[in-house]
Image (spheres, rainbow, N blue to C red):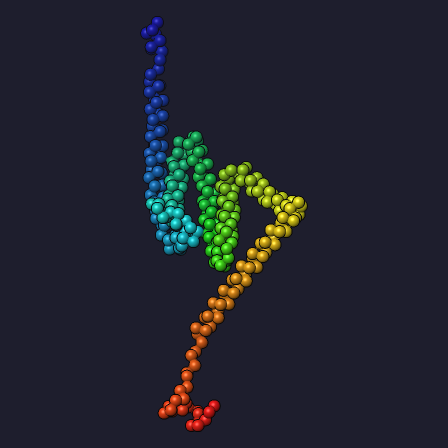
Length: 268
């Protein structure tokens, strides 16, 4: 009975099927390796060319103006190096997606495809943050220098910087699709709260306290303006006096020749 069962099993067809699967997988694996190697060389070449182009167009000047260079001072890479590394890994992911596509539809290809599709949005979000920080730093410098003589100048400049950076971060998160269900309602709630406090407080029960505060703020601003105007006038007057030509003195002692254009004995 056992001998008949053993003879009924077709070992030849099993080996044939296994060998056919191996013969099918080996070319796919070779193509997988070839695509990875080519993708690696292409990624390195693109990263090197991009590094030269970005440095030539002045990417590091943008990093200095936005404050990113100062924050990356202790890092191994500067902003241009980080951008080139990101592009390098993006190209590698694309090559990896193509390589896994050789084996047909599979979960790894689907995951890598979703990551590659999201990366451009992430790059745009990073660009938005960098541009927002550059604008915020410029506004802070302008406001701080314009109100450098006032006691509230630094506070106003910092508030303007924080407001612009916050808007940039919220826009970047919305672009990247991160926490959009939280950032949007939070921003709307914050703006609605500020508007409600202003409307109810200024137009409602806080009329007298706000009037007193406005009077104090206006008096303080008027004093600051008068002080700045006086200091500017004094600085201009001293500068004008320092550049005024010195008049020559006329000596009238005995034996001193008269000045040109004055006759002897003339008492003018």
